[in-house]
Image (cartoon, rainbow, N blue to C red; front, side, top):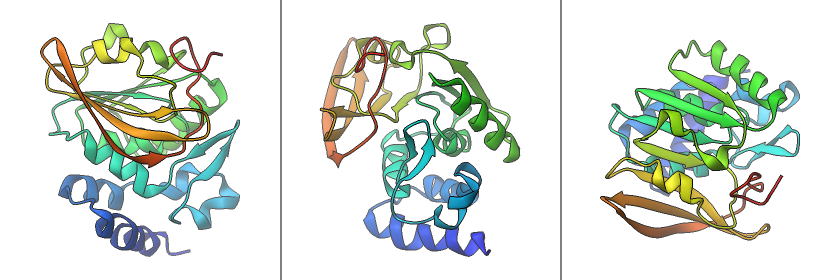
Length: 213
């Protein structure tokens, strides 16, 4: 199967027409092989305009939403970025091409090991992994030049806000279990600015500062 053509078509028809304009983000989505992050039987649908199941009740996000969240971080390339919810590993792989270092936290050991294998196949070496409750962040690695949460939260976890570096952004879906709003929180000194981007639907964020275990 010609995955390169499918990948390029995804970028040209799903991302750019919807406002994904950062050249570095576009290049990242052209580079990372998304079909290696989904179950083998779904590889042919990897570049389609919708999320896909990856097991354990989790999904790999629609390409456009992943690109929108990534672009919203406004990364320059020198940052250490935190991802909450490793899932398939695709988002961490995208971030690895845009940041100096990626720290990713996943609560399910099976998903984490699978993601590590998939990321390793991409010859990526700047991702650090942790098994545990991501809603508390990763205090030992803070501060972060960007934080992305790939699951829907009932509210914005304060530990994540506190682990943001000054001038950096947290991108997170916030709402109830059936509907969320993609939200950006930007740190400005000791204060925070917050704004909404668009409606969205994600799997629940589980943990102490999420929907519980």
